Image 1: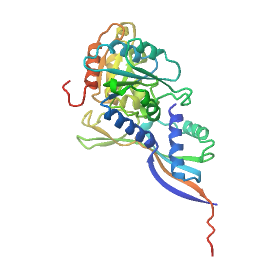
Image 2: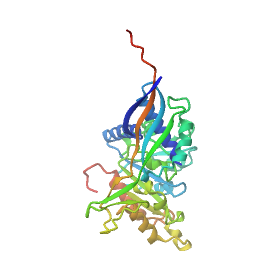
Image 3: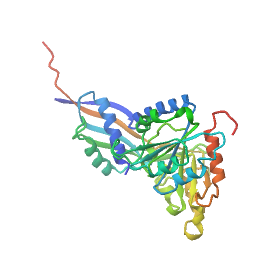
Image 4: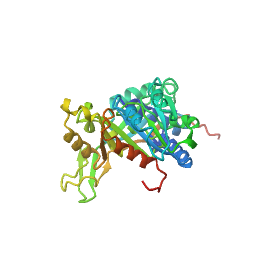
Length: 226
Length: 119
């Protein structure tokens, strides 16, 4: 027996990225725009979707709901009579803490792509792993709520660098918290300079109009006027 | 915590190139911006590689420092903190990553059966 060195020089996540490209190709082919929606658990992803799901002029929304277990969020959204597909990472995918391209690929046959214009993939609540795994999206949004602390962009730069829009949620709680909004925005811009931000409250509705407009624009066919 | 997910990607990449041979060593190049904890990666790699061609293989790393470059004034600097702002001209949004984003399987060492050539 002897040893042979095999030169590889390959990004270890290439396999995932290749499948993500295939997903993207299928979504493009169906004329569906895709958003990867990420945050820590409990930041308010589902509530922010509930707020706008029935009010997206000219855009038919569908949701792929990623969770380790259960269908509580999917049930909430399905009660609004929009197409919702539940994707559980447990047990089929070993209880993974994020969605990857292969999991999303497995759900594509169940998605009514000809009935929707915009697919929001609500990722598993987690500030780390979802940032590493592209799933075939056109854009990435993350929600950071003001209860999480202003240093989070510096602690989780992979996630905060990976997105095009940050929704700063639960701003109705600002009067009750020590959260320094200015500092948070400074830290966010240090990590992801100039990233688009919308201040929202899923509870009071503040900022929801701007969030809705962003989604309508993201879900409109390429080249169409926003 | 992402080391578990990442170690799966390493094993898959190594196995793909091992071509059925047993893997003894996996050499990685890992950039500082990937926030990987080597001890944690070792732990999960041992776990995830069980039952694959990588079982029992050693992992070695070359850690690549994060170097950022300002496209306005061309300054390049090394950083520990993820501040994408030029220390000279203050430009934000014109800073690119020179190194530090790597997460590559650089090479593997595999065990070959001795070739007995007919005389």
